[in-house]
Length: 294
Image (cartoon, rainbow, N blue to C red; front, side, top):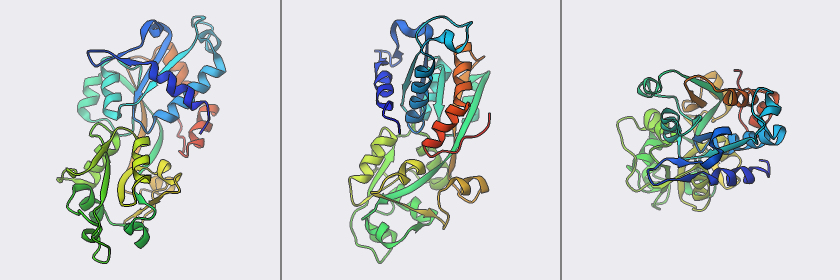
């Protein structure tokens, strides 16, 4: 990932929460873009935004009909649910989601556009030295559900040949796209474990999983595969790869979506065009995702 990502994340932090729970962006509002939501998409979109700002500098360099004003793009996280609701309420010009929209959300948005930029696998992973990681590279959907629901409290509850050491289950918050996908595609009628340790972002998820030898959790396969401290499991014998997403072999995949309510403003349209440009596609590939056509 590019070093300039840090600068963009710092820019994103300028966006401050106001007392009523909305995000305040100050006087830059008129010629800025505001994006937020999925923490899976956060680093990728922050990097694309940084490249866009570096490339053009001012809006008139993108399109001569736009003002000669400095380009400012604010990017923040909060989870897919936050990104969708932010697009609905006008907090964000572009909402970021790593799950499909529900029918009720689409109805609440009214006229809107969804831009699919890639597909992502949701993978189950554990510390590389955990008893489960040492024993196997494959888990079943039932094994995953028993850990995630809390029915399996120790490794021995998962497999009788493993030690009776407590499992440290790391989970995303309920607003995240990954938690909604696990609930829908793995848990079904079961709930999440009350002992699960909730974390607010993919980055925090990764650090927690890497930091405990008895950890188990779920996160983007792209993020998990880049860690030398985690074992990424096959699910029902199928590895979480893009090839297996495209073939339909891997069960838990999710779209990475940009959401725009109403008609695209000229500024939003130029940015979306940039995301689908050769430069944008290259950045998407650098993060380990496979870009898709517009």
